[in-house]
Image (cartoon, rainbow over all chains, first blue to last red; front, top):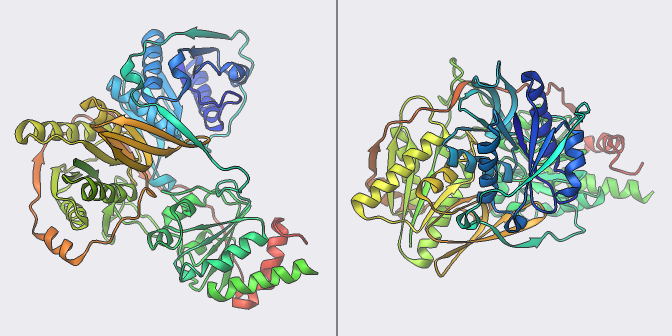
Amino acid sequence: MIVGLVEHDGRVVSEPSLQTLTLGRRLAERHGEPLAALVIGSDAEPVMDALAAHGVATVHHAVDDRLDHYAPEAWAACLVDLMGRTDPSAVLAAGTDRGNEVMARVGARTGLPVAANCIEVEADEPGTPYLVTRLRWGGSLLEDARLHGDVKLLTVAPHVVQPEKGPAVGEWSVEEFSPKLQDADFRVQVSRQERRPAGKVSLPEARVVVGGGRGVGSPEGFGPLEELAELLGGVVGCSRVVTSLGWRPHTDQVGQTGVRIAPDVYIACGISGAIQHMVGAKGAKRILVVNTDTQAPILAHADYAIIGDVQQVVPALVSAIREAKGR
Amino acid sequence: MDVLVCVKRVPVTGGRISLTDDEQDIDTRYLGFTVSPHEECAVEEAVRLVETHGGSSTVLTLGPAVAEDQLRDAMAMGANRAVLIEAEGPEWDGAATAGAIAQAIMADHRDAGVAYDLLLFGNESADAGGYQVGIRVAHLLDVPCVTGVKHLEIQDGVAVARREGPGGFEIYEVPLPAVITVKEGINLPRYPSIPGRLRAKKAAVERLHLEASQSGLEKVRLRLPQGREKQVDILGDGAAGIGRALEVLRQIGVMPS
């Protein structure tokens, strides 16, 4: 049996969890094993059908009043409890903040190794070591590794596997259980939440992102970039150099240690294109570069480029768009 | 309060990564070294906490002898003490690394009576990205651990930690001692001062030798992902490129025609 940990919001299963179940189902089919899922929380009822549609034969539903607020240790305890009772060959979670931390805690509790952010998994038989390919350096480097352990613990990198519904599993069931939980499992628990303000387009969702790097020259230099973004219904992002210089807040930073964007077009102004930055912009459908340096690494990632100084080109672009819109 | 901060030496990769011939490592012949960005912020946070609450900060790394440079960088930023767990040879996996760090912390407690109130880590290392060392250390020491923290306050022996969650921000409150793994953005790390650098150059670095436990995640080889092969379309030089840029934006559909 292969178990996938499911993240959900009480209405739908998260996209990375569906991707994880898809990879889990392929592996389970190859090994002739059933696919199971662990769902946590009393509000999980609405997601059961979607799990069956993605090939889950048994949904294990952990129920305990104390699980209503996310508690990573308790989630790990639920998985370890389930592992003890069902003896799976592998446990998978999404390579999200929650998935990675819960799986690391399962690894710590069981003494098993964990492979984070896998994109491919191969194994001859359920019991043998898995040959995994995982992301390093935020995805700019791949590692092939052998994952050992009686139970293989791994997370699946988000947005690499296309989620797929499985063939009808025929009979499927939900098995509710009360996991063995100690008070200590709740010493790390969300005590309160602050909702994100609604309305404003966020960087990860924006259709147009105008990014600025060192070539923008100063905090004030971002004025024309803001104007350009506004004209195109987009938002402004920046490189790590810019946040390190204190020109923009870290929340604007695109890259490995910042935000990952996926716009229709990324207009990158005065950005050299370090790999850590480009990893964050990998989801961009098109990249338009404004840069003085024709040798800048970012040109290798660009679809279009204007060779010139950001401080002249961007204001000129803003006026041209204004004029075109005015007509 | 006494704070421990753990860092990892990683190469400064720029525009392109190339690998060694045996495909085991990045070719670092022409590269400098630093610590992972999250960890640079962890060092800054440790130094600030000690500035506010008193006590001392210790920086620890597991790595080759030359990782001493990264410890001295942290001391130049204000860390008071440095410990190097020397580990040559093949890469240690997350469990082996955490095991050695926990062992060093326990030995420090037993031999020198050091009891850390707070242990800071980066959320994940820039290179291996295993997302587990801080969590495994917390488990071995039986202390709570909050990961991915972007704002931290210590109030009456409790760590109040804020991090991004699915719908906004999540706030956790855990009693000390605790492990907190931080993300870049929690602060803006300072540049070391000249006196700080001079002091760090002369400071002592304590060294430990520990045996690696067997790796359960065994690196076979590294490889570069297939890049998207594309040819850049140069729209023009400076103002000469504006006209075609407008066409392109229209084509993409982000500008009304």
